[in-house]
Image (cartoon, rainbow, N blue to C red; front, top):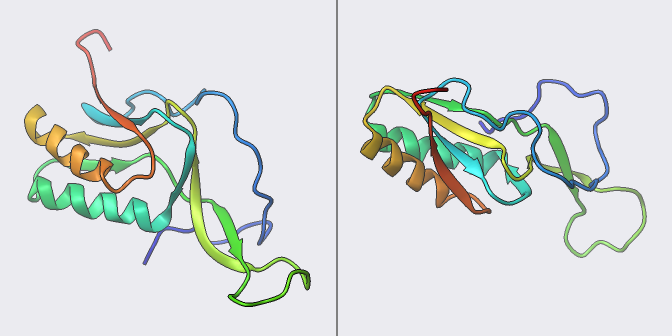
Length: 139
């Protein structure tokens, strides 16, 4: 089952604008290696799950993967062939709002080459450009 909040204060929200760079959640917090976004956009719960499955499959039950984003924004959609008006559509999917610099995934407990491969496979499932980051000795 895809990620989504257990309960929300408001069932439907406006689309919103998302300017600027990520001020928090932009550094490695848990793992040795990470995947950082270079563009802004929405990552759906299904895309997050696809990344998780791809990375875990490549890790072959070694190491640990952290998901640093959570889909907490509901996106609505009206049914096909319905005229305009009659209210906002029902919730279709949940997305995580991602700004440039947001840390998406982190990996630890595997060699650098395997971590790069795992995160490369995860990156192919994402709708934005990302980069591989590594914790330095002084961090």
